[in-house]
Amino acid sequence: MTTQQTETAQLQLDDYIQAWHNGKLLHQGRVTDVVRSLELTWILDAETGVRKLLDPEALEIVRVAGPRA
Image (cartoon, rainbow, N blue to C red):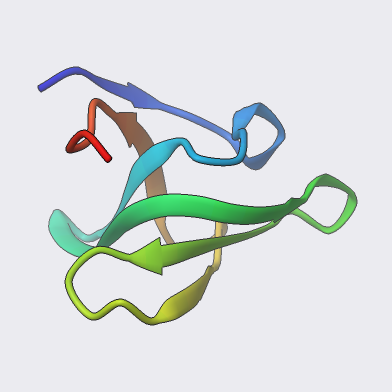
């Protein structure tokens, strides 16, 4: 699995990302929406199927090679 730490400004729709906090994986899924001016990112959580808003100040966001659609 390839990882690349990233910032909100670098995220694109359909990127597969993971959100980590204190070394624990909290969320992972495909980016569904990005508001760069406010540094907001939403994903469709792969585990729950629920849309999640990620806090880039509280989470380490990494782009990964995700499962094929």
